Length: 225
Figure: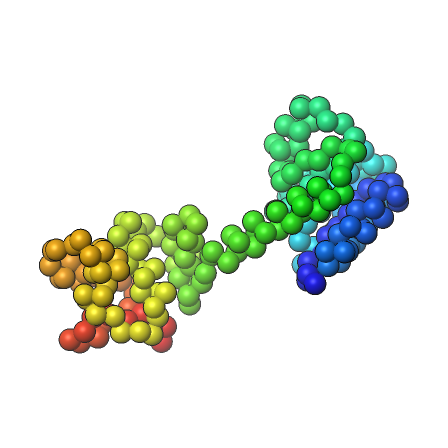
């Protein structure tokens, strides 16, 4: 079972039931709205648990485009637009407004479920690939590092060295081991190059640089104390 809640917005009850039945089989909990105004009301009451919105375009009171605009002002929650119109111009308009996926009616419910799962899987993957270590945030997909929310500039080797230390936190790593794993076995230079890189990384991490401990006679250890 998923802890994921999906908001289904469509003025046709038959369509909402069809989508709900297929998604519930996969373990999703469903909230429903029959017009744009109700959609915004339900979203704002439940935005902490809604992970995706299926949003029809043509609806009474407030159309899907208007709902999309308002939600995008406050959230990046994934939105799949559902529409009876399949014109290219409509799709381009949707993407400009921040649509994540665009499905034209009639559609296969199984394909819709597959699209939903693909988007949520991608989002969950991105979340797990960004890890926070006491204020040092590592984004392995983007190869970026933030300290207390601010980007810091690291060279490729500095980045790889920091990641290696962090992934082996609380373990004393010898200079030879660091060379073999970060610089690889084909490196024949002086191991003091590690000391130079560590010095630069500590400086760039600021106060967080204290997490990189020098282990006398051995090498280094990343320890969040």
